[in-house]
Image (tube, rainbow, N blue to C red; front, top):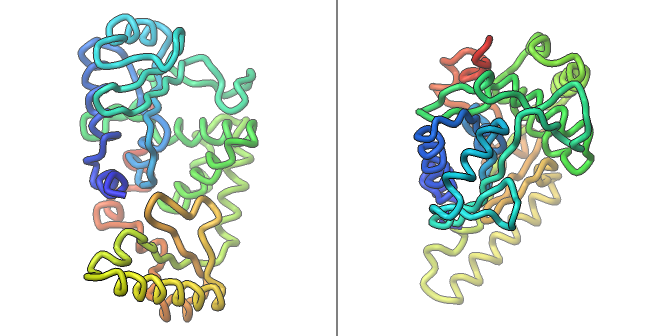
Length: 284
């Protein structure tokens, strides 16, 4: 639970491992672009992840293993392309330019060379927004076990208020899916959210009796919410010590102190930026 809290403050073991591996890659002159959940966070969609995904080219993959294996990093098994940070105990998975997302089979969308798509965010290279969305669409479209990738794109569209014309930046292979997701948001009702934090339920309790009373009260409140139609976020509504509770009814939202989802995740800094920033690929 503590690690989850530190994660959103960018002080987790994952973030420490990220800064260290990126520093090492820079020192070695290896082109890279951070992908996965950390790239989502860089573009404004903050969700928890306990590993690191990094896009490199094949020459970079060979070089990083030559210089890093046994020097603070170990492969999980002999011949693996991935590494584990031995200090922070974080798994680092490498995506290789030229390979294919999703089911791994040939398709019009492949992992690009990181040098052509990386954007610098606070000194770390991440996948540009268009590349991130394109790869996630291709992954979710071709691998049923990766449907979360489509949900991630849906959240990016919503949070960054991406318009339908953003699809013109994407490969024709994935444009119809982008259009479908974009259209689905237009027909969806407004959502209100409350983050339910298990960690703090009995934080101030002075006795086991107080703990029991607090937990009973929490259970009663949840039962009332269920009766009023409150649900868990269907796109992965639970984490290690929190849950996203959802309603589309503004009266129920006021009753239980829910917040407008758009207001909840936005910030002054986000609202001043153009849609998609940091959001264009290096070549665009």
